[in-house]
Length: 238
Image (cartoon, rainbow, N blue to C red):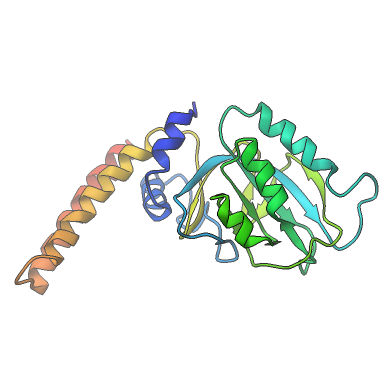
Protein backbone atom coordinates (compact mmCIF):
# COMPACT_ATOMS: atom_id res chain seq x y z
CA UNK A 1 0.00 0.00 0.00
CA UNK A 2 1.27 3.44 -0.93
CA UNK A 3 0.96 6.09 1.75
CA UNK A 4 1.89 9.76 2.12
CA UNK A 5 4.44 8.76 4.75
CA UNK A 6 6.12 6.38 2.30
CA UNK A 7 6.20 9.02 -0.45
CA UNK A 8 7.79 11.45 2.01
CA UNK A 9 10.46 8.88 2.86
CA UNK A 10 11.22 8.29 -0.82
CA UNK A 11 11.66 12.03 -1.29
CA UNK A 12 14.76 11.90 0.92
CA UNK A 13 16.75 10.02 -1.74
CA UNK A 14 18.05 11.09 -5.13
CA UNK A 15 16.92 9.26 -8.23
CA UNK A 16 20.27 7.51 -8.93
CA UNK A 17 20.15 5.91 -5.48
CA UNK A 18 16.53 4.88 -6.04
CA UNK A 19 17.48 3.36 -9.40
CA UNK A 20 20.40 1.51 -7.78
CA UNK A 21 18.02 0.09 -5.20
CA UNK A 22 15.45 -1.09 -7.76
CA UNK A 23 18.17 -2.86 -9.77
CA UNK A 24 18.92 -5.20 -6.86
CA UNK A 25 15.57 -6.97 -7.22
CA UNK A 26 16.24 -7.85 -10.89
CA UNK A 27 12.57 -7.17 -11.61
CA UNK A 28 13.28 -5.47 -14.93
CA UNK A 29 16.25 -4.90 -17.27
CA UNK A 30 18.71 -2.33 -15.97
CA UNK A 31 17.97 -0.19 -19.03
CA UNK A 32 14.21 -0.06 -18.37
CA UNK A 33 11.87 1.89 -16.12
CA UNK A 34 13.55 5.30 -16.17
CA UNK A 35 13.05 8.16 -18.64
CA UNK A 36 15.65 9.07 -21.23
CA UNK A 37 17.55 12.31 -21.74
CA UNK A 38 14.63 14.02 -23.51
CA UNK A 39 13.01 14.58 -20.12
CA UNK A 40 14.95 17.22 -18.20
CA UNK A 41 14.29 19.02 -14.90
CA UNK A 42 13.34 22.66 -15.43
CA UNK A 43 14.34 23.45 -11.85
CA UNK A 44 17.14 21.05 -10.86
CA UNK A 45 17.70 22.71 -7.48
CA UNK A 46 14.30 21.59 -6.18
CA UNK A 47 14.09 18.52 -3.91
CA UNK A 48 13.00 15.20 -5.43
CA UNK A 49 9.46 14.90 -6.78
CA UNK A 50 7.49 11.81 -5.72
CA UNK A 51 3.88 11.04 -6.62
CA UNK A 52 1.45 8.82 -8.48
CA UNK A 53 0.79 9.48 -12.14
CA UNK A 54 -2.30 11.16 -13.52
CA UNK A 55 -1.94 11.10 -17.28
CA UNK A 56 -3.07 12.99 -20.38
CA UNK A 57 -2.35 13.31 -24.08
CA UNK A 58 -1.92 16.80 -25.48
CA UNK A 59 -2.01 18.72 -28.76
CA UNK A 60 -1.45 22.36 -29.68
CA UNK A 61 -0.91 22.35 -33.46
CA UNK A 62 -4.66 22.66 -34.20
CA UNK A 63 -7.79 23.62 -32.28
CA UNK A 64 -9.78 20.92 -30.45
CA UNK A 65 -12.68 19.29 -32.29
CA UNK A 66 -15.04 20.52 -29.57
CA UNK A 67 -14.94 22.36 -26.26
CA UNK A 68 -12.56 25.07 -25.17
CA UNK A 69 -8.81 24.71 -24.89
CA UNK A 70 -8.84 24.39 -21.10
CA UNK A 71 -12.02 22.34 -20.59
CA UNK A 72 -9.98 19.29 -19.54
CA UNK A 73 -8.14 21.32 -16.90
CA UNK A 74 -11.32 21.31 -14.79
CA UNK A 75 -11.58 17.54 -15.25
CA UNK A 76 -7.98 17.19 -14.11
CA UNK A 77 -8.77 19.29 -11.04
CA UNK A 78 -11.56 16.84 -10.21
CA UNK A 79 -9.16 13.91 -10.55
CA UNK A 80 -6.58 15.61 -8.30
CA UNK A 81 -9.27 16.51 -5.78
CA UNK A 82 -10.24 12.84 -5.49
CA UNK A 83 -6.66 11.56 -5.30
CA UNK A 84 -5.53 10.80 -1.75
CA UNK A 85 -1.81 10.83 -2.58
CA UNK A 86 0.25 13.57 -4.22
CA UNK A 87 0.02 13.21 -8.00
CA UNK A 88 2.43 13.87 -10.83
CA UNK A 89 0.66 15.23 -13.92
CA UNK A 90 2.14 13.41 -16.93
CA UNK A 91 1.61 14.58 -20.53
CA UNK A 92 2.41 12.93 -23.83
CA UNK A 93 2.55 15.66 -26.50
CA UNK A 94 1.16 14.06 -29.66
CA UNK A 95 2.44 16.77 -32.00
CA UNK A 96 5.69 16.02 -33.83
CA UNK A 97 7.46 18.35 -33.75
CA UNK A 98 6.11 20.04 -30.64
CA UNK A 99 3.97 23.00 -31.71
CA UNK A 100 3.65 24.98 -28.46
CA UNK A 101 4.05 24.82 -24.69
CA UNK A 102 2.15 22.23 -22.67
CA UNK A 103 2.10 24.26 -19.46
CA UNK A 104 2.52 27.71 -17.99
CA UNK A 105 1.92 29.61 -14.78
CA UNK A 106 -1.87 29.14 -14.63
CA UNK A 107 -1.79 25.38 -15.15
CA UNK A 108 1.03 24.78 -12.66
CA UNK A 109 -0.62 27.03 -10.08
CA UNK A 110 -3.81 25.02 -10.54
CA UNK A 111 -2.05 21.69 -10.16
CA UNK A 112 -0.14 22.77 -7.07
CA UNK A 113 -3.31 24.19 -5.47
CA UNK A 114 -4.96 20.79 -5.91
CA UNK A 115 -2.06 18.96 -4.27
CA UNK A 116 0.01 17.82 -7.25
CA UNK A 117 3.67 17.06 -6.62
CA UNK A 118 4.91 18.04 -10.07
CA UNK A 119 4.54 17.75 -13.84
CA UNK A 120 6.22 15.88 -16.69
CA UNK A 121 5.69 16.48 -20.40
CA UNK A 122 7.29 15.20 -23.58
CA UNK A 123 6.57 18.68 -24.92
CA UNK A 124 7.68 22.07 -23.70
CA UNK A 125 6.85 24.63 -21.02
CA UNK A 126 6.66 28.40 -20.65
CA UNK A 127 6.35 31.04 -17.91
CA UNK A 128 9.39 29.34 -16.41
CA UNK A 129 10.27 32.25 -14.10
CA UNK A 130 6.75 32.30 -12.67
CA UNK A 131 6.59 28.50 -12.32
CA UNK A 132 10.00 28.53 -10.61
CA UNK A 133 8.56 30.87 -7.99
CA UNK A 134 5.93 28.23 -7.20
CA UNK A 135 8.60 25.65 -6.24
CA UNK A 136 6.68 23.25 -8.46
CA UNK A 137 8.87 20.57 -10.10
CA UNK A 138 8.48 20.39 -13.87
CA UNK A 139 10.22 18.14 -16.39
CA UNK A 140 10.20 18.92 -20.12
CA UNK A 141 12.07 18.59 -23.40
CA UNK A 142 12.52 22.37 -23.61
CA UNK A 143 10.74 25.74 -23.61
CA UNK A 144 8.49 27.63 -26.02
CA UNK A 145 6.89 31.07 -25.67
CA UNK A 146 3.33 30.40 -26.89
CA UNK A 147 0.52 27.97 -26.03
CA UNK A 148 -0.81 27.55 -29.59
CA UNK A 149 -4.12 25.70 -29.74
CA UNK A 150 -3.38 23.80 -26.55
CA UNK A 151 -5.86 21.15 -25.47
CA UNK A 152 -5.91 17.72 -23.87
CA UNK A 153 -7.11 14.82 -25.99
CA UNK A 154 -7.53 11.97 -23.48
CA UNK A 155 -7.17 11.69 -19.72
CA UNK A 156 -6.09 8.75 -17.56
CA UNK A 157 -4.72 6.52 -20.29
CA UNK A 158 -1.24 4.98 -20.67
CA UNK A 159 1.17 7.52 -22.16
CA UNK A 160 4.65 7.20 -23.63
CA UNK A 161 7.06 9.63 -21.96
CA UNK A 162 10.84 9.59 -22.32
CA UNK A 163 10.85 6.02 -23.57
CA UNK A 164 8.71 4.76 -20.68
CA UNK A 165 5.05 3.74 -20.81
CA UNK A 166 3.46 5.47 -17.81
CA UNK A 167 0.11 4.23 -16.57
CA UNK A 168 -2.29 6.09 -14.29
CA UNK A 169 -1.42 5.62 -10.58
CA UNK A 170 2.15 4.50 -11.37
CA UNK A 171 4.65 5.69 -8.76
CA UNK A 172 7.19 8.22 -10.07
CA UNK A 173 10.36 9.70 -8.60
CA UNK A 174 12.26 12.55 -10.26
CA UNK A 175 14.99 15.10 -9.58
CA UNK A 176 17.88 16.86 -11.32
CA UNK A 177 19.17 13.49 -12.55
CA UNK A 178 15.95 12.38 -14.25
CA UNK A 179 12.73 10.45 -13.62
CA UNK A 180 12.18 6.80 -12.75
CA UNK A 181 9.18 4.62 -12.05
CA UNK A 182 9.10 2.61 -8.82
CA UNK A 183 7.29 -0.75 -8.86
CA UNK A 184 4.57 -0.58 -6.21
CA UNK A 185 5.30 -4.13 -5.04
CA UNK A 186 8.71 -3.08 -3.67
CA UNK A 187 8.09 0.61 -2.96
CA UNK A 188 7.82 0.18 0.81
CA UNK A 189 11.24 -1.53 0.93
CA UNK A 190 13.09 0.94 -1.30
CA UNK A 191 13.93 3.52 1.41
CA UNK A 192 15.65 0.98 3.66
CA UNK A 193 17.54 -0.46 0.70
CA UNK A 194 18.64 3.05 -0.29
CA UNK A 195 20.07 3.49 3.22
CA UNK A 196 22.03 0.26 2.92
CA UNK A 197 23.40 1.22 -0.49
CA UNK A 198 24.51 4.61 0.84
CA UNK A 199 26.31 2.93 3.75
CA UNK A 200 28.05 0.48 1.41
CA UNK A 201 29.19 3.22 -0.97
CA UNK A 202 30.45 5.25 1.98
CA UNK A 203 33.17 2.62 2.50
CA UNK A 204 34.77 3.69 -0.79
CA UNK A 205 34.13 7.39 -0.29
CA UNK A 206 35.62 7.38 3.22
CA UNK A 207 38.72 5.58 1.97
CA UNK A 208 39.23 8.09 -0.85
CA UNK A 209 38.93 10.99 1.58
CA UNK A 210 41.62 9.53 3.87
CA UNK A 211 45.38 9.96 3.85
CA UNK A 212 47.89 7.76 2.09
CA UNK A 213 45.51 6.13 -0.36
CA UNK A 214 46.86 3.41 -2.64
CA UNK A 215 45.49 1.48 -5.58
CA UNK A 216 45.55 -1.68 -3.43
CA UNK A 217 43.68 0.02 -0.61
CA UNK A 218 41.15 1.45 -3.05
CA UNK A 219 40.53 -1.98 -4.53
CA UNK A 220 40.01 -3.47 -1.06
CA UNK A 221 37.50 -0.73 -0.21
CA UNK A 222 35.71 -1.27 -3.49
CA UNK A 223 35.52 -5.02 -2.90
CA UNK A 224 34.16 -4.45 0.61
CA UNK A 225 31.46 -2.23 -0.83
CA UNK A 226 30.62 -4.78 -3.53
CA UNK A 227 30.39 -7.56 -0.94
CA UNK A 228 27.82 -5.65 1.08
CA UNK A 229 25.79 -4.89 -2.06
CA UNK A 230 25.92 -8.57 -3.06
CA UNK A 231 24.63 -9.69 0.34
CA UNK A 232 21.84 -7.13 0.08
CA UNK A 233 20.88 -8.22 -3.44
CA UNK A 234 20.87 -11.89 -2.48
CA UNK A 235 18.59 -11.17 0.46
CA UNK A 236 16.14 -9.20 -1.67
CA UNK A 237 15.97 -11.84 -4.40
CA UNK A 238 15.51 -14.54 -1.80
